[in-house]
Length: 329
Ligand code: PEP
Ligand code: MN
Image (cartoon, rainbow, N blue to C red):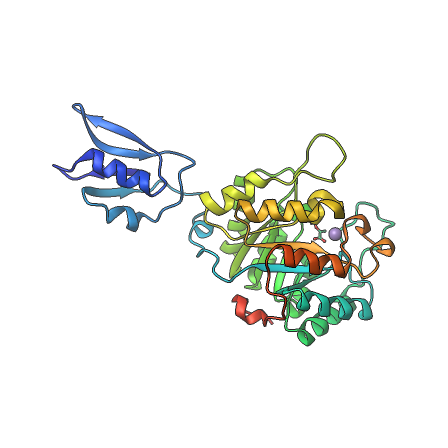
């Protein structure tokens, strides 16, 4: 971005005002006097209209952004999002029990997999439409929104019929045909980051969704590939801070998939929130040791209650409509 100055403007005052907005500047000089400032990469995101209000500013020139629709998304103002539930919806009774706990813990969204991406073709991969129906009923009975993954293009219409928010799984972040199909439903989308994706690629995936009609994209950091194997992935707290503070995006931290270990969920959730996350996605199971998927990272319902208390969430059952989530059904 280039900010040009009016004739007679005081460059130092303009520069101070720009710096005050979180912008890093470099002067572009004309015969010894700054005539303009370049706004450097990694500055805060500030609307050009705000910069034009600074006394002495003549014009603001914006370079082409690769993700203008993402940049234009309004900031998150809907309170803390807590999306909790099992990795896989294993039975009707289980999801009803958990929905009650999620609501009691101040949760806003019931999460759960009906179509599961599994590394092995022999692993349990979800109960499909039945699970969607169970989840919808359990969420409705407890004033929660439903967020669940559409694993492939063929599932999108079905998932959109039951879910309020459609989840794009980490493995599908750059499955552009899927992103376009999800976008066409007009849904609100929780976009997980692929473990090998850069922040820019993640933002561009969001742009694909919005360009095809998605009404809102919330970004979910769930860990990237790293050295070592004591945790499943590495929670990229710096990406959360960038998404929030540089790009002005809504971002959710997923300490469950990032760590793969229930003992690290609370500290990582705290780290994510401290870095600017607007919410937490966490897995919970009535009997973690018997879970059909992701058991080692599942919290017990009692631990979820403790987590929400530690995060300072109201321990009641809010109506999800308070959180500005419009159902896509
Ligand atoms: C999930 O949330 O259940 C899931 C499969 O996560 P990810 O896509 O981040 O691995
Ligand atoms: Mn899982």
